[in-house]
Amino acid sequence: MQEVQLPRELAFMVRNRLKIRKIPYKEIRVDRIALDQSHVGLIEKIISELREKREKL
Image (cartoon, rainbow, N blue to C red; front, side, top):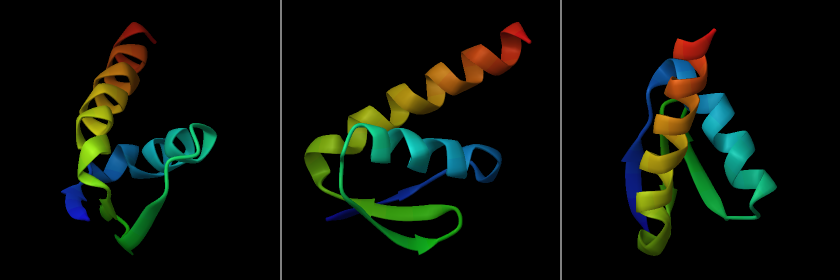
């Protein structure tokens, strides 16, 4: 498993997206999770999608 640092303001939304997609992760801290290395790229995609949505508001 690989640890991933999350932007604190988006951390809960990222976790919700992972749950919806049924991707297992281990919570380390509020802004840090560990997940299988094959899903690390997906985190970056989710964060960019969430930031795009915020910019449109």
